[in-house]
Length: 258
Image 1 (tube, rainbow, N blue to C red):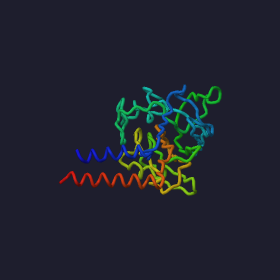
Image 2: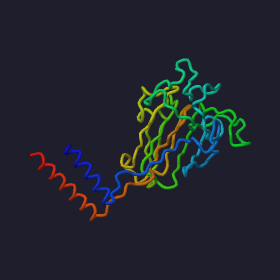
Image 3: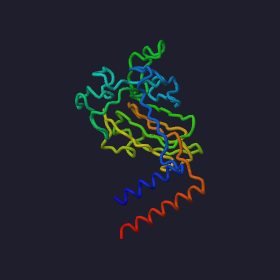
């Protein structure tokens, strides 16, 4: 009880002193806004919710980013991107594996489109199908962000050279392979995985200006989690006052234990 009291009082003091405890987060899931199966959002670049996407197709197909409805009952081209997977090892209504619950619903996810069928007339590709030869999706932020994470679908265990590359606003970059981010046991056809947000503190960055998603083969991304604002640093006088207040609480706590 004492520990809870001290902790909650410390939070109240921090809030009263204007010390931000966490940054504001944005989750971009591609649903809504009239989007549907086959909606093209990048050719080769396009923006959604202030984030710009640039597509580079490495498999010989077009540089198009297209949304795929993972909740269809079937798709003749891409059963591995369906929760109702059509592959021989897939259970209807469940993903084949990964670190997320197998019944997780994603709805629309972003992939690299393999063909140009019907894509130019109305912005809807008539034959959505992810690129088996892989490629990259650059996620570019108008203002450097504090942290970034996402969900990724259908990344195979053999795609060891694919992954996420974080680009520092001050220059330089750091790359994490899919196996580093998730683990080989959770990768494979029709899998669904969450990659928890990685912050500038984890990276030793000034700010994240861009993240590059590299697919060696097929795959898709969803639920981009972006912390856009950096937690404010208190002014020196405020920091001293907060430290003194917390020290006083610690002394109070020790006295109450006797």
